[in-house]
Image 1 (spheres, rainbow, N blue to C red):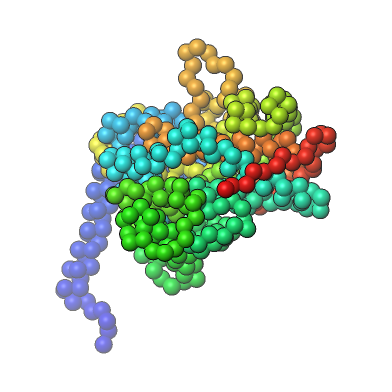
Image 2 (cartoon, rainbow, N blue to C red):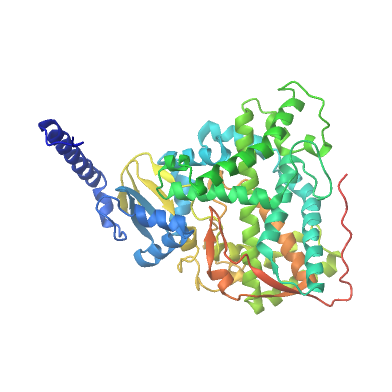
Length: 523
């Protein structure tokens, strides 16, 4: 017997489905008719640009696809995911205006689909995608650990961690080894954020009993698997596909289990020592008692699931961003001898004045900070993974944007806007600190976000990057093994990184007084 037959009911049902599809298509076109004035890449009549987006996410080129479309289509364009429009902005001033004022006056809100994705990624609601009162109490809780006084106290930890990297590199130069610096920087930043967040000692030989040992490479790989899934779903992949038992999806669930097993015992202990759970007889490391996790656990609104999610989110945010930025900065310096020499001269001058690098030296390293900002402009590690949605009909760049339209941006394209950054393809750190005309606005820096939702860890990230770069310039000269390819062949999980992991050949400088300063050990 045939499964389908040409009965009147079958014909009516099929016809209704077709009519419904075309009616929905017509309604979508009418609702978003004002967006037709915006340029758009070629698209399928039903799927829109969804297949292009998903393929780009699968091949780790999602950010490059948006950037290439920006070069073809201009500063504002629209893409379609199954006929749902997403307006992409590429002008720094327009993006900043939206972030700062658009959310403040209620015209925009955090994209609910991306908020759901963030929660799915880390296993619960986290700071980054909250707004209103839910954002405020989380931000206030975190702020206690990121005040200026805390950051001043963090200097010794940062310096100690960076000196461990210097020792590794000095050993490598003696053996004439080529070093991939990206994994090295990832371990540096991961150990630092886990020290602050979880109280895990920087000394690799020190063992604690709060939970499983820190294995940076395994932890990094687990986070990479999760963020690849995030990018795929953000590009349009059906969220239910992760439940299909393919090899890649099994890796996804294994990564989630690994991360939960790493943080969950520590969250339990944090709740115990803050009096919110019955205290067990587990020995507690004094560093853990002073950790950010324990401070968060004192907030009654945080439960076990939320604390696990927030911890995993902070480890991710505190690792990839700064590590990859350092890699791109080292690469850019290796290809720009003029900038390299000026930077090294500044470090040597400050080193002689202060007998090394200390917390007070940082304000004098203005050229280095300009280098880091210029690196973030040309090679932004984050590339618009937050996004907004219009809460009412509004106007952006002279275009009427209907209520319910998703808005996103390409920071890579925005960072190369010639009107904001003259000679946009040139590496010019001077642009960030040269005297501006009296009526000129300061340059826009989007990688840390803007407004009240500006990145919580901006100051810590700049501290880590400045200290590490200063020490590298003081102790070494270097060359980039693969040349410009290291800065042009980029990959992406959720953050952008050099695909070859930035292989570098270091050479110890002959300065006479270039012995390592002793590293103080934590008590």
